[in-house]
Length: 241
Image (cartoon, rainbow, N blue to C red; front, top):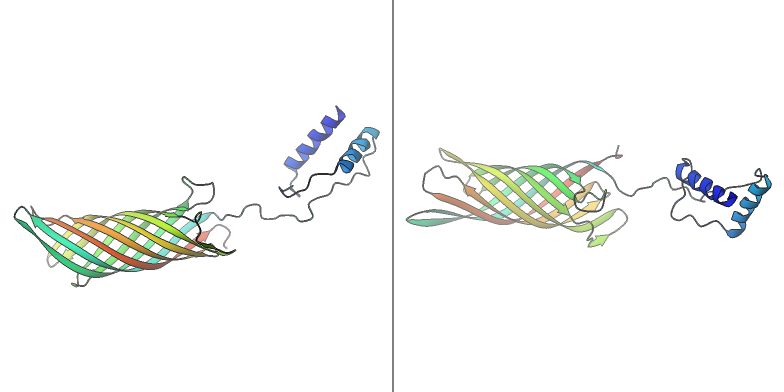
């Protein structure tokens, strides 16, 4: 009975001790030491008992950083094809474009291991200038899976991994005296290089499509594009400052 009480007492101390917490690396107590404790308790002489802690106290219990905010900027180049059609026929046009995109978002843990936060929800604003001197703006919402759990290269403070993103947006465009808007969908696949868990350098290959609401009734206006973008994200995490 006394042995059982001693074991319960030691378990309670290990659970609620605040100054020194036993870690997974703590070696088991030797049989000789445990028997010495039991003998001292049974004889009533507990003054000479000496409980030893881990030789190294681990101050950092977790290896993750919880994200507060992500801000980013990307520059891209794309080739576009636009088709205007009605019941009598269709006409196609080709463009190239330069694109500037701003993002603001936050990382979450959704369907992955707790606290890993590889999934990002974000808002975007982008400005795209076609080579025909026409510029259109896009506001949208995106979701990105940063697949850090499939590292292609990893060091202590840096990691290279693939990414997959999908965005759904609304675009607006002015052509001469006509203004119209349209729904935009974009899919991108890329690589990201994370440094010190704050800076992300990335390159993406993307494809998008826009269904414009043509101002003239009866005309369908569809545009599609494929391109490449380079960018930088900054992740603000708890504990950075």
